[in-house]
Image (tube, rainbow, N blue to C red; front, side, top):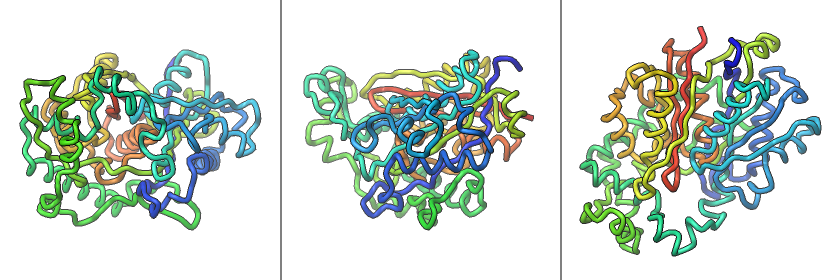
Length: 398
């Protein structure tokens, strides 16, 4: 159909622990991008000279992740000089925004074939390394309520009335689902291991139990006592106090990784001999109160569904970045997503959150799960810092 845009393929690296000892710690972000771009070209047979642009998300665009890694990788791979590249930053939602921006360009007729995705190497470029005002300027932090993401998660858990046992149960459940999905080979088509290196998502811990998670200490109580609670309560005085409930087991595991998708028209898919994975139906970005920042992804889902003419009940697959367990419980309760639709193969608490890459990984995972399950509509969504969120609605191609 004229104006429609399709996901033609998606590849990603495994996600490594963001640690000097992590499985991808020895690989720079540009090298991760080179790896997935090379794999995508090999799988699809696309001529790099025909790619109109390469759009990548990245949250920490400094040091090795600075100076436009998208364009850098195009040049270091020896692709034709005519292929440009650009970077996008909406914090953790950057990868989804790269995909939705690429889709908009194809839909509007400004491009026929694009590569979109994201990258993050948090083991080499740590969180907050860009030292932006939102992290370092006391006046800005006070004015907007720029709390740490973990404090924001505990704010939501406090406000929604969740207890520790509910959060621990969710943390164990997503670990169980991720381990099962890996055992069943559900990521085999998407994951392209590095030669001689990591071949699986390193954070997954098979056999994790809620009882085991219940023994972990709250992860953000010290941050709260150091002034973060007081900052949050100045903006939300009705809370009275913040209950610190999230632990390492119910928080997203910081990771390294990269992912790219090939997007194009149906004519391009036919020319390349590729069966499209899914049609991009709609997308949306949304904002929320920065102190409750992690609710923005849910709001973006609502906007994207309205644009698609759909409701929550129409979705067969929901890939939601697990920005802490409380946010997952909240969205499931409010939008009615059951176990049969919500993160059926586990999520970022279990498999890792590579900030700029996560959104692209989720879009690819949503398309793949629609194909596997035979569902019609799905959504991928991410919440990020400062109350930002993005979502993309997909339709399986029959």
